[in-house]
Length: 328
Image (cartoon, rainbow, N blue to C red; front, side, top):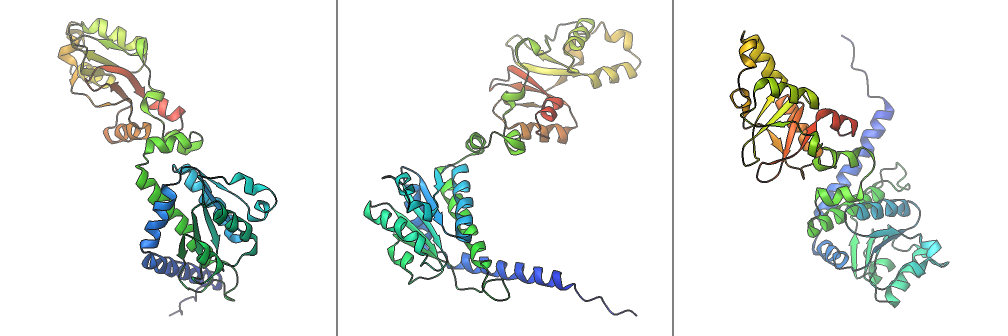
C-alpha cells in the first residue's frame, strides 16, 4: 500500500497564512465593544466627508476603505498623509471627519493630519494595534486591533494586521450603511456601470411600453387576436378587461396546445377570453431586472407583463431585453 503523498510545501504555507488570518479576524470580532459603536455614531453624524488616511500598506487599505464607504452612501475620500503635509490639508474642511490607520500608531507622516484634525475640532477615529500609541491617545475614538502575529514567517510583513484593518473598514461601512437604511436602489445610483450596475437596473429601464404592448380584450376573436399577437413579435398577447386591468394572457404555448388538441379550425372562432391563461405572472416597474429574470427562470417563461399597483399593464419585458442589457 502506497504511503499518502505529503502536502506540497506551498499549500501548507498558504493554509497556514489563511488559518492565521482567520483566527485574527475571530479575535477582532471578539474585541469589538462600545468604542466601535461610538466610532460609527461619530462617522454617521458627519455632515461632510470621511477622510481616510494611512501610510504604506495601511495607505493601500485606507484607499479601499474610502472607496467602500463612498459606494455605500458615506461620502469619503483618501488623502495621502505625506501629501497632506504639502498642501492637501486644504482638502480637509470643517464638517469632515478623519479615519486614520496606523498599526504602530506612531507613523510620523500622519502627525500633521492628526494635528490638523485637533486644531479644527474634526472628529478623529484611529485604527491602530497599540492602545498607548500617539494615534490612540490623540483620537476621539481608538479602535485597537488585537495583538496577534503577522502571517509572515518572520513576523515582519504586514499581513494579518492589514487583513484586520480591511475587515474593520468593511464593518464600519456596513454598519453605517445599515444605520442610514441604504437600499439596493441607492446602491445602484453609485454603481451604474459594469455587470453589477446592469443587475441593479429596474424593470422600467428595460421594458417596452405604449404601442409596443400587444393587448386585446376578452371579446376579441382569436383570428384577430393571433394577428395582433404576431404583429408585436413578443410571442404573447395581454388580455385586459373593461377597467384596463390585465386579466389574462395568450402565449405561443397556448396556441400550440389548442392546435394539438385537434380543434385548430374551431380555435379561430373562439374569443380571447375563452383561450387565455388567467392570473398570469407579472412584475412591477420598480422591481430589479435581476428579480424579473429569476422569476422567468423559475417559471420557464420568456415574457412578463409589467403592471402598476392596480394591475394595469404599463409595459412588457422579454428575456432578450435582459440578455442584451447584461443582466443574465
